[in-house]
Image (cartoon, rainbow, N blue to C red; front, side, top):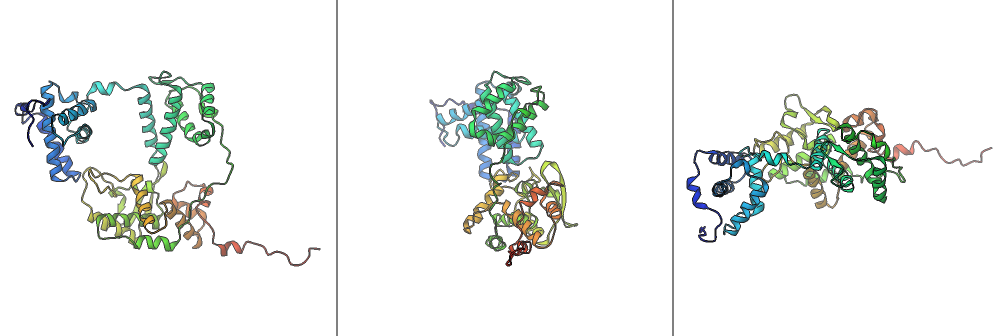
Length: 410
C-alpha cells in the first residue's frame, strides 16, 4: 500500500518513535493472543495489529494517552485514516477495534467518560442488570426494556435525576391512557419496571398497583403442534458431517428428547455435562438448577459436536457461534436454527413446539401432569401451565364422552 504524503492527516512517521516495549506494544501482543483464542484467521489478526500500530502513532501525533481513547476518538481516527487513503479501515472498523482492545484487556475506557453517564442511562443500565440477574430470556429482557424506555420517553429527561424518578400516580395514569389499545400488552412489563423503581429507591410509592389488570377477552393462543414424524424427518435431514450439522443435531436432540427451552440450551456449560454419571444440569428459569438424565443419543450428539468444534478459551459454553469471535450462542441463534431447518422441510415451527410434542408423548405414555411438569421445568404446583402443553389423544377423550340417549327419558 502506498503511503500518502501531503494529504495524510495521520503522522505515520511517529510510528518509529513509539516504544517497542511500551504499553502499545503490550496491547498489540495481548490483542493478537485474544483474537487467536477467539478463532480469527491469521491474516485478520495481523491486520488488526497493524491498525493498533497506526492508532498508536496517530495518538502520539495528537499527544493523547491510551486512557483518553473513547468511541468518538476511535471513530475520528478511522475517518482520518480513510481520508488519508487507507481504505481498509473505516470509522466503524476503528470502533470495533476499540471494542476488541477492551474485551481483550489491552486498553480500558477513560475514567472521565465513565463518570459522564446521564441519569436515564444509569437507570436503564441498572434495570438491565436486574433483569439479567433474574436469568430471563433475551426476548423478555428486550420487551421489558423497551416498555421502560417508552415510559421514560413520556416523562422526558428532566424528571429522571440521580437516584430518583419524579412520577406520580396521576402522571402515570395519564401516560398509560395515552397509549390507547397498546396499554393492554404493555401493562405486565410496565408493572415489573414500576416494582423495580420502588425496590431500587427511585420512587417511594407502589405505583404498580395503579396499573389495572388486563382481562382476557379470548382464550390463550395455542401453539402449532408438531407430529413425531415431522420431528424425526427434521433430525434425519441434517448433514452431521460438518461442525454446523453436528451442532444443529445436538440442539434438536436437546429439544426433542429433553424438552429444553431455547434459553436453557444457551446457558449450558461444559461443566454441566456429567459424562461419567450420564446426567445433565439444566439452568431453569428464575435461577433454579435441575439435574436430568442424559439420554445416550443426546450425549453422543454432544460429544460429536464438541470434538468437531475448536476449543474457545473465552467461554465455557457448550453451543457457540460458527463465526468469529466465537461466543456463547444467543437465544436468537438457537431459534434461527430450528426455523431455518423446519422451513427447508416445509414445516415452519419454533423450538417450543418440541416441548409440546414431548408433553403429548409423556401423556400418551400414562405419566401424570406432575411428572410432565417436572420434566418441562414448570414451577411446582403450576399445573395450569402444564395443561396448555398437553393435548389428550382423541381416543382418550372419547372414553369420557357419554353417549346420547336413544330412548325418551321418563
